[in-house]
Length: 243
Image 1 (tube, rainbow, N blue to C red):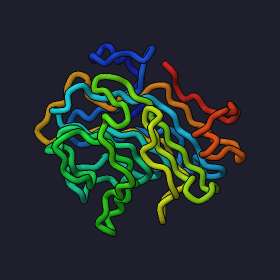
Image 2: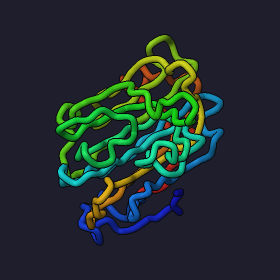
Image 3: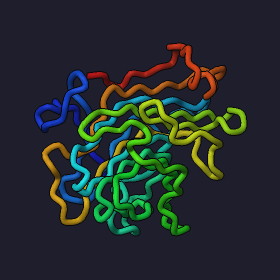
């Protein structure tokens, strides 16, 4: 189901503060939940850049799947354990998954350790494909520390040169840099989602926690190369919430 935006004090739930209140998406009934910012036309003119902070769960043995994405126009359940009931997710997602015996229904392979994915969700229930994996990394490779906040950056430049149209970074490390996939979306909402595994109770700290979310509709002259080697302009930046 979709969830109304909830801005709460993370320290109330045992989550360290990034400076104040944060957005929490939490699934308390194992059904999976999503939140959105913006609308289906976001980024349709010149692409966009999304920056935020994502809290990484402290216990990798608890079965959790959390994610933040963009270019979404559909989705409610966030990768249900029943694939035919997944809610038609779409868009690009950075997904962090812990215990592989839990919420492994996002079309991800089994793994004995936590993994970080960048995927194109394409669950239209017509082609049998829930997600298309564009990149996979060990959390250590991108400086992720359980129980701490990490930065996430997503950039779409549909008019960019070959190999520089889509970028995903975590803690400044590149997860994916390349072309927009065939049939990949070029506009849509910023999205957040969370679910726990079947038979798993939601821990006190549970949820996808987001803070300091900024969406930049990006001047047409700014390229991904400019972002990777930044002196960034500030126009057209929307601060949705900051502490």
